[in-house]
Length: 312
Length: 118
Image (cartoon, rainbow over all chains, first blue to last red; front, side, top):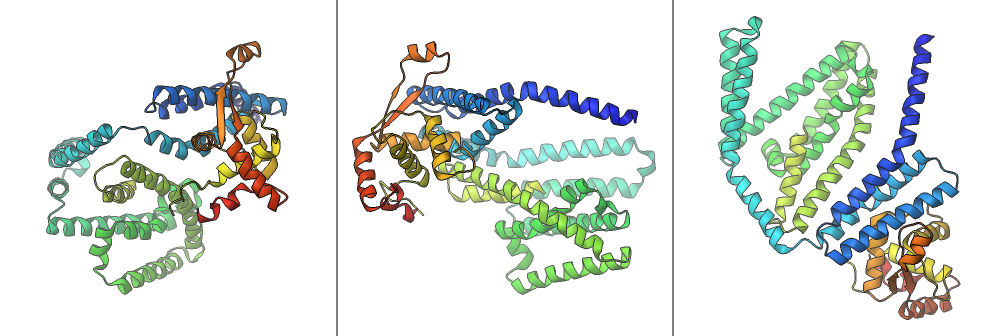
């Protein structure tokens, strides 16, 4: 009883706080966004757009207040009209970015490519240090096998990352990625069914949703697709059919029912929708980079592929 | 698909249609007013996005369909609100909408301006 009362009081306090602060905060946010995207525009256009946005926010608030809307509702409406126009705002802003800046950004991008090897080495050394430190603090895992395996894995991984252009390195890396993903999915699947983790909504959405997007990664990231299928498309399809059949069989054997697997797939479909939005944002970023003149339109597509790969 | 030169986007057509409908005598309007008019006229469930609206107004002004001016600061100060930028439909737009109106009951600007090619 006391618990319910505490929850009710906390809810009321939070609601009041949001009601009091949402609208001013949202107005600041929208003005901040307009200020930001209008930065590259010439002074006259910049000031004009900011003044018009100010006026629009004011009129919008007045109109909604006269209609009897609460502050929080107005804040949500304001965010909606701002968010709906954001892609166009970015496109408008991109028109005013001088070519000299676009060239400079392209130059940075080239320089970053040269920094790939030292960056991989630094990351590798840092990871080695961190891992060895962790092992030294964990007496239960201080066996020769653990030390050697962990160090060798990180060293090899670092070397591969520093020279991904080498065909052998690419092949090993792709195989490694494939094994890693398969292992991870296997562990998640087993844990999920065995420990009934599929019952926890956040676990379904954030961990298991990775499955339905894998085909998209393979479609977008061409080199990886080629490495996996090597032109044998039929094998690719058979692989997926087998994966689905095996997972259903696994569910039946471990849990005595196929329902857990269907529950998982339901969550995956939900997550796939969210992932489409994430990919949409990446594609937009890639498109804008191309628009800004980052050398080679393919750079944008590469960004999409690497972005998606890094998401997982 | 790339847009034909001079063709209007759906939002640009909506702005001109709403303006022609609301201000047939060439009255002035501001950004929010036209967004509200589009919502009312077309039964749009929500108001047009800020960026979408002002980008379209910019384009219409550049193409000569709209003229615009800043409101007298004294009026805005007297009413204690930010200054408005006022838009007005030009002769070019009026001529175009009247041509369309003579062939249909409602002005449908987009139909003759290659909107279908978007």
